[in-house]
Length: 452
Image 1: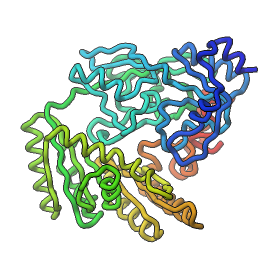
Image 2: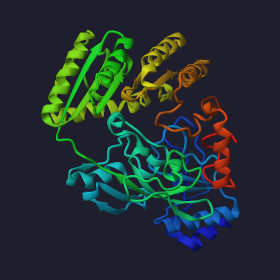
Image 3: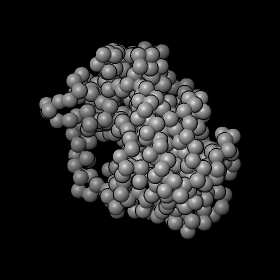
Image 4: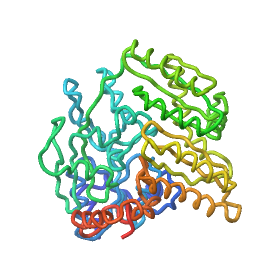
């Protein structure tokens, strides 16, 4: 009955029950099992989203938002079926103010689409999760990436959101001003809520100036502990890196195989420096001095834009390098810990992986304490999957134990729900009450974030 109501309100061209379309919206890039929805809607405005939610609310039908499908924790899987809402048609730039370094976009605009526009004005949208994700999805998961050490995460870029609540009410959470002391910080509340409190339809973002000059550098170390220590040394020296990535030898080997690079197969640090030419050259010289004091090898610095892009693309393709291994599955994590504990956690992760007897990789944005792990296993070998899960869980619990979090940027979705009580304690009950207040019928992306 409700599907006919959707057709009557939105028109047949915005509704699909095609088997192929349902299958395409049954999963994201995570390891979690696919679930086909009953129907997929393609809204083109906040008004369309409001109509969908009014019908869903009246009929107690689950609604799951779907962006680019690039999530890694199952947020977009409609585990209770119902309606999936795809935002690909909500891809308009609403307002662009170069002089205010501000832009307002619909939720379906992708980060590359946005940067193609604003780059022409010497501006950039700074958050770079690797995938060409939709802006709405990036807000919903509080996305991050390699540049977070300089510019911060998605939450730091937001001025205002347009959100449609479960009953179809449309609200705005902020303003166009750079700061405000007025009222509750609703923008922050909806950021990272993964579509469980409301559906984000429009986003107003801060933009940044494109740096005048960039250089990158890389070096290697014999031990992973020395590599992590070197990263911490850069931060303590106050060098304002744009990017700083730790990539262990296992990961380097897979990058070489997948991307055709020939990096030394050792534990490595990759840097990017940005600013005025003089300042960047001084920062690179200082970083070189510090790294050589710590006995680094294979130090290389360059400012060839083409080569820099190739190297960073190879780094970003690491997830796909892991995924494309034959007869191998992985259980991944993305913990984030206080910077002072990063070295300890990286070493702990390496030890647990080695003890498991399974192949494991470590890499990540160590400049802000965030690093990724991948424990690989053969699904055809009894016990390997369980061992991989136990190893990954031990790393996450250790991160929480030292004051960190189970996820720095991927979000909770389905994969990290089991860690929410350990991380949040009594605050988890407050989150559940908040969920009930905004979504009393429990129709918004049900079964995500925490176990009800």
